[in-house]
Image 1 (tube, rainbow, N blue to C red):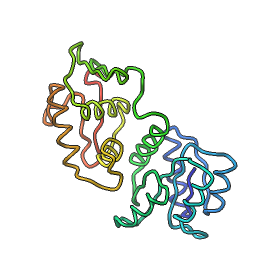
Image 2 (cartoon, one colour):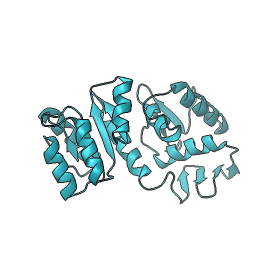
Image 3 (cartoon, rainbow, N blue to C red):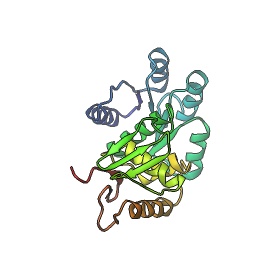
Image 4 (tube, rainbow, N blue to C red):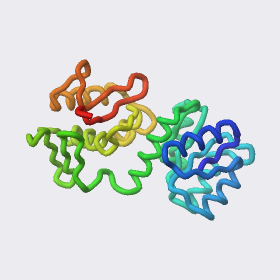
Length: 223
């Protein structure tokens, strides 16, 4: 559900999300969007904070009074206090305008995962890499990987999103619980450790690929 008053943005976001495989509804005002969300509950709401009929954070509080649907706030305000206030009002995540369709799709998938379980219970295989989240075990070509709990969590997160780019900000939010900022260095260091244990490096990647200016993704190196 997209609640956005700017027609150009609303149509562009809806179009790109449909291309990503999502079913999309939209509204141009806050109250219309609230009514639609109540009548036909969506899986996630993309909420613009600068609405013509009601302040976005006030609408968020009203929505939280009647629904636990995940909400991603979209705002042009990048001040940390504004972001904290938005999260405190009940948002599950936020994106700062202008944002890319890839980033928004990644955030949608992330908040939907939070609503089910932190990690999948069934085994995940990406090429020669196999992870068993329930047993907290990872193997590469049948050989066990000696991973710290945080390294395993990071690898399982990337494996669950294999083939899709995940931003460092998203990793900080979902793995380190730093939803409105944090040091990218934390992610970089753990990715470096993980690469070493997978027998690769940033200069010669195999499983973990960096998409410059966007994020990282896990791939099957043989494909």
